[in-house]
Image (cartoon, rainbow, N blue to C red; front, side):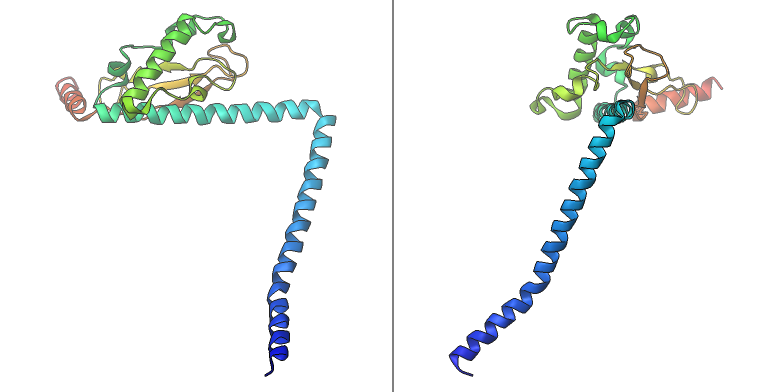
Amino acid sequence: MSASQASLWAARRRAALMRPARWFAAGAACLVLVAGGWLAFREARLQRLPGQTAQAVAALRAEQAMLRLKHLALAANLAKVLNNSLLADITGELSTEQPCVLEPRLDQAGPDSPCAARWDRALGVIWAKAFGPQAGPPPDWLRRDPWGRPVLLNEGESVCQSPVVNCVNDTLRSAGPDGVVNTADDLVASIPAFLGPELHRRAVESARQNP
C-alpha cells in the first residue's frame, strides 16, 4: 500500500469512527433544544398562573426546611452518641424552645431576642460536641429555617423513665410559613433516641424495681 493510499484509508477510518460521535452530539443538541423549549414554555405558563407559582415556592421551602431539620437532627444525635449523654445534658436545657413558644410570631422576634439567642447557644454547643471545636461554628444556613426564623428545640428525651415506654423523642421544629408555633403548617423532625449504655442500664434497673 502506497503512502497516499494509506493516508486515504486513515482518513476514511477516522470519518467512520467520528460518525457515531457526530450522531450523539446532534442528538444531545436536540435534547438541549427540546429541554430549553419546554422550560421556556413552563416558565411562561407559570407566569400566567401566579397562584401555582406561589404553591411551588412554598413546597420548595417546606422541602428545604425538612432537609435542614434532618441535618440538625443527625448532628444532635451524633453529639449524644459521642458524649454518651442526653441532649438536655449537652445543652443544659430541658426545653430550649420555651422562649420561642412564648413569642406570638417568630418573624417578629429580632436576632437578639431570647428565642434566637437560646437557640443559637444550644446549636453552637451541639455542633462542637458533634464535630469538635476544630470544625468551627455551624454554617449560617443551618442557623435559621428557610423563612429566616430560629429553629425550636425540645429536649423531650430527658423525661424518659424507661428505655421502652414513657419516652418522648427530642424534636426540632420550624414554625413554617406563618411563623406561628404549634399551627398546622409547622414542620417537625425527631432526633433519634439515645439513652447511652449507663443511662440505659439505670433505666432498665428502675423499670424492674418499679414495674
